[in-house]
Every structure is written in C-alpha cells, then in structure tokens.
Length: 169
Image (tube, rainbow, N blue to C red; front, side):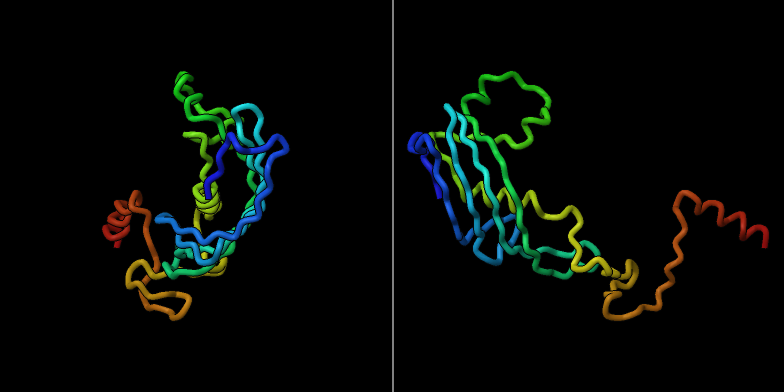
C-alpha cells in the first residue's frame, strides 16, 4: 500500500491493515496486521503504531525451521529524500535510529512493515531455549537422539601443550 504524503490531512490518518506480504529476507506465513497513525508535520511524516505477523525462521542450533509470532511497536519519522542529499555525511546519531526517507511524495507502507518484521527477528533464533543443537562431528540432532562422538575439545591455542603430556608418559 502506498500513501501520498501531500494528501495526508492535517489531523493525520489511521490505518488498520491486514496485508499478505512477501520478502526474500524472511518467509512471512500469515497476513501482517498493523494499526498505524500517520501524521504530517511540514515535509516530515510520523508513523506510529503496532504490527504483528507470523514468520518462519531456522533454529541457529539444530537448523530446523519453526514459526514465530512477531509483535512490535514502531515510531518512525520519514523525511523527504532530498533532505538527505543536502546534508554532509556524518555518523549516525541516536535520534536518527528511527529515521527513514521517502521519495516522490510517496510512502510505501508495505516496505515499512516488512522492514519492521525483519528488524524484530531475534539475533539467534532458537526453536526452544532447551534446544541441544546438532553434533558438530556426526550431525545427529541431539534433541532426537544421543550420539557416541567424543565431545572433549581442546582449545586449539592449547593443543601444543598436549605434546608435553605425551612426552611425560
């Protein structure tokens, strides 16, 4: 869905969306629901609201796919794209973390929703906190079976000390 910035009334607009979205970065399983308040102050656009949706992730321990529900609040300021071109390059300031840009008097709400879903994906997705993962030697899923691989690992930086033990014997 696209919103024309110049057509946003002074009181703003409220949107209740239920959109089926797709992304290459994350598999969206259900329609993304959002309740948004879009307000305009001069050339800047403020988008506040809540979104929720179900996505499919891969467990970082056992590599199985699992579904997770994402629910997130958003509070984002959109500036016209030409404002970005006028400014000198500088480091990102804390107040700019929730800043975006729009072009051609158009705000793409679908892209905003996908972006917010992606930003809320956990850094290390786990199918469950108790997930045991897979054996690094044989690849057995340790949640389903026990393997007989030796799990004693020596820090590679200390491996040379192993030769001292062999000499002593």
